[in-house]
Amino acid sequence: MSRLEALKAQSRHKYAEKWRDKSYHERSPAVDAKEDILPAINSFFKRDIPRRGEWGGGFECGSVLDVGAGTGRIAPFLKEAGHRVGLHDCVANCFDKEAVKSADDLIICDITELPENAYDVVLCSDVMEHIPPELAGGAIRAVARCCRKGAVFGISNLPVDLHVNLQDAEGWMNDLYGAFNVVEKLPGRVYHPRQTPDNWFLFRCEKGGE
Image 1: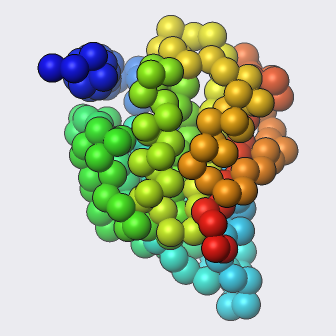
Image 2: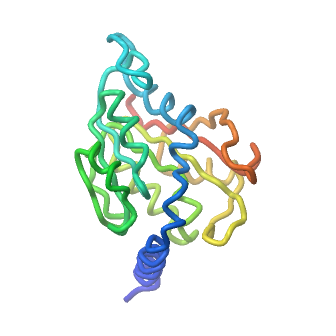
Image 3: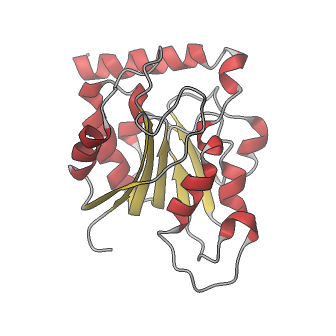
């Protein structure tokens, strides 16, 4: 087994164990930040149809995959906007049973094994900081291959136990530009008592040809 494959296996084992802890299911960072994340996702779609629910915002529908979804509790909000929703994680014991009811697809695999060209937009919130630096570039490229329009990344560099990749915003932008043609750092509010604008970043990334 190569070093990279060993790191992937260690990560899957670590999070399978972590999700057995019920307290780890209490927070959903993507839902905490939905007031910023959902408009960023919807911005990839046209604005010429009637409003669909609180989070529809007058956009056309598309398909959205939440990568590293954890509990998957963002799924009902994406569904309310009219999107086809996929939930992904590297382990199966993380998903909230009620959230899964709003998902059209469940994908269990390493992030580098995502299906290619399969969804209009990929959401990757509070995931990259959990991925070792040696694997981060491959994970970003896999997200780029999976989406047709682009991706939204929410990334924290808060120094807590499970965060193993603590780059600043400029470092993450450089990595994202390796896979996307356009990378924009969006203004984001702070949703956690220990977060500041300097340690939680929101990026909107477009593929070429959009």
